[in-house]
Amino acid sequence: MDCKDDSPIPPDNKPLLGKRDYTWSIDTIAYPDNNQTLMYDICGNSFSDVYVVGHSDGSSAATMYHYDGAKWLTTKYHVNENGPIKGPIDLQGVYTFSSSDIWAVGERSYEYPENSGQYVDSGLIVHYNGVSWHEHNINVFQTLLAIWGTDSNNVWIGGLNGELYNTKGNKFIKESFPSNIGIAQIAGLNSNTIYIFGFSQSTPRYYSIYNYDGITWSIVDSTNTFPSNPHFGNSSLWVVTNNILYSSGYGGVFQKSDDGWVKVLSTGTENITTIRGNSSNNLFAVGRGQIYHFNGVDWFKYEQFSDQNILWYRTWSDGNVVFIIGLTLSGIGKTVVLRGY
Image 1 (tube, rainbow, N blue to C red):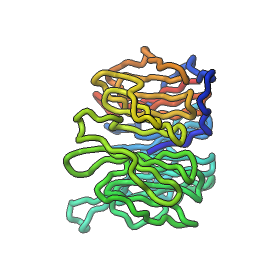
Image 2 (cartoon, one colour):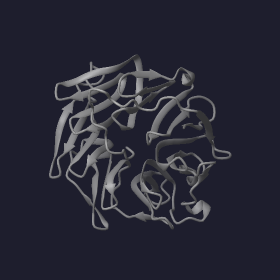
Image 3 (cartoon, one colour):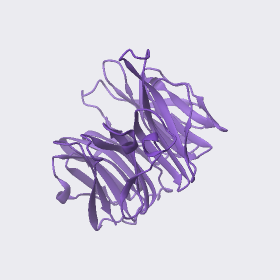
Image 4 (spheres, rainbow, N blue to C red):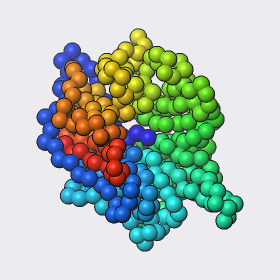
């Protein structure tokens, strides 16, 4: 589930250092009378136009919020707030191309058979065109987890059991992909350079990276059975250039170049949930009580955000501002949003 990045800055002998001295503010997102308001993904167009999506155990309207530069408000996309989208819903990923082109993916639960008390999940895709929200109907009974694209005519969406879709005109067409792989993240540079980070949905558990060259998908690398000394991360993937990838997970951050994988940030036994950025000199790596920044030369830890009760989960940055969402790990489940500018 990955948000867009700007054109990467190629490495050189004298790199331009990424911004590190932010002024920080923090917000809390908690829907009234809910025990859980947990946002899983974030993407934005500017400091005053940012979306988060996730789970609510009360109103499905609380599964998507928008920040307008002053406050976080639900988007009113759900029928509970007079919107068009129906049903009990969870969202897993969000991606923005502009203020009038917003996409989110996740799942809707159905009782099947009717009145049986047994529920199944189906994939959900919703889109905002600048005026209203609407749903793209696809016949898939699997949760969708990841979304990435170059524009609305080239959107890639992935989920459990190898469910992978790409826009062709106004429709989503199913692509061939291994059915035993859950597609956790999609990230790329252009329509001919796209990567998928996936996980096996059977035991033994392993993690794989796939590449799309504009024609076919092929496997790039795979871990040993986790946690038997994996040589890249088991949580997240980020693409910087065509031949430089970063992954994060148990023990830190790994970088892949033509020479293979190297651990570039060691966190001992701690897990790094996500690595993201908008250029090779502006990367954020976050986890439980951990926020690190890479400015093109070295990694720096923001020690003031080391609260072990917060799992820093996802981040979005345009190089000038950064938003980091965190989930509280005790008491009522809330989302905290760290804003740096």
